[in-house]
Length: 289
Ligand code: ATR
Image (cartoon, rainbow, N blue to C red; front, top):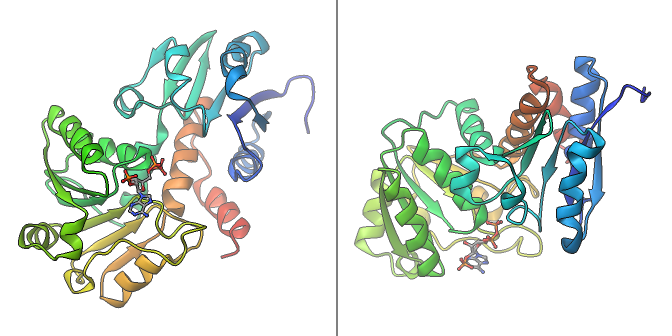
């Protein structure tokens, strides 16, 4: 029941109507008996500074930030958490007695999702397909949490090189491969796949409207020693995941990362343990599986 004591968390984005966060977070507030409400608000790019300034003024508990504001919000924070600084994007804001603290829960969300399926990152060699915003969160998460080597394949080499440099600055080994090395089946690319036990698909291939597309990874390079993680969660099994599964790899879709970025945000706002299984069920039901 919303009453005069209800505390608000808002989602700032444009568009926001596709977001599953209101359903997931409101179910979590209800289950934990917290008098909080989560509301999605559409904010124009020209209004984002006003919207952020309103958080302490209106006494909101905090916010989630989504496209297109994740970068713009960065300089508006009083304090930035390390993940968020390295990723260069904020997805969660905590109002700590009027001080705005910026976080990015995508890294933590990704690592917790990996933990959920029993993957241990310590000392691992991994492959990352893509070098955009989502790849940055994944790569920062892994670099800060123990992986030994990150091998990045991206269509635009310059973006992969920039991301690899950032990984190296964190003291982790990083290599860049041309996207075409997948098509030409270069020896060095093949060797990277042989040495890796995790392949993370972060590109938009497989996501509507590119459902029928997938990265040109030679399927014979995928074996039962690989965990293939596709950040896409809708459709639940991309063409890439389907082919990887048929090649014997263990496959996981991006629902876990979506879930755990929300779980981590919930914990930051409320300092309470999140009802993880309930939140997972809400997402699964909503996505029809
Ligand atoms: P997100 O925030 O979801 O990561 P993004 O920052 O736009 O979105 O990144 C999209 C990623 O998908 C990039 O790695 C992009 O490759 P480029 O850096 O070369 O643009 C990749 N991508 C998108 N369409 C692609 C395609 N048709 N083939 C290969 N990679 C593609």
